[in-house]
Length: 101
Image (tube, rainbow, N blue to C red; front, side, top):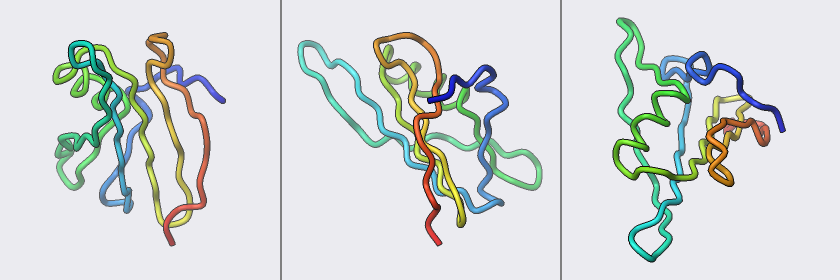
């Protein structure tokens, strides 16, 4: 596992072929829930991009404290990230994948 020091710099690009999956674990009253979350991509002029920090902000706005898992797949490789395990407030790269090609 690797701590992500600057989650605002860890960004993903639709132009680059990123297939993004975001799972959120949160408390709804007394009950724990898990949902697929579809983040809002930001238009950067020629491309739609999103960073781990933007995903975190969007999730916190909707769910409050939560555990977030992001699977970012590109054609040849990808990474798996986790935020908020044990409510530590840090992003970690917890795995890599071979991509979807």
